[in-house]
Image 1: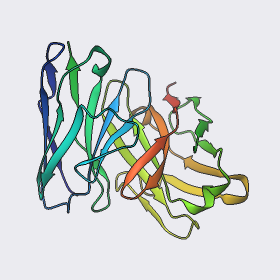
Image 2 (image 1 turned 45 degrees about the horizontal axis):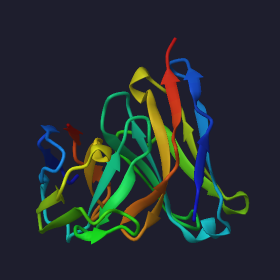
Image 3 (image 1 turned 60 degrees about the horizontal axis):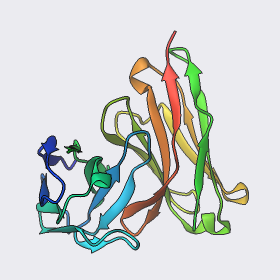
Image 4 (image 1 turned 180 degrees about the horizontal axis):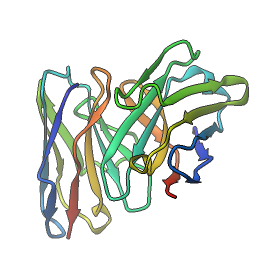
Length: 106
Length: 117
């Protein structure tokens, strides 16, 4: 099973801040790395797929990069509506695995 | 735009069984591989199971194999998750999700399963 180590587990930032979340895979995942946003009581929402591709309709202040085993997710200018928990996910091999999540607070 | 809606959650006693359903709004349901993902209260996301578009291939999280069974009826545009021998550890919101490429999109709104005596 591929382990996904996501950090930090929580993050407090201010409106307008640049925020970065990291995700490390226990082995090469061929860039099959996705990022989801989950707001309380809601289903996860896809933001970034295949490490760096922005899902259609998602704000361009969200971005992803990385390759191999190390990936990052960035919010260029934090907005109040970005308050949520963010998860990375690998789908290179079964079982599909998620990072532990990063809870973002303002 | 595909819409997924889960149902079938509720309160079940330990050792009991439950069948969840996920109905798709789109006639193209049969074109898509599908997944179940769950989330225990206050916890992270845990992948549960996968089924291929034609239902011939199934894959499960190792810890759940043998107790959970994923299936689908493409004529009804419906995905199922049959769960048996439930324990309190299975208390979760269960989401169905379409596989698109190597990611999940969209997700249903989830259905809550509570295992309690």
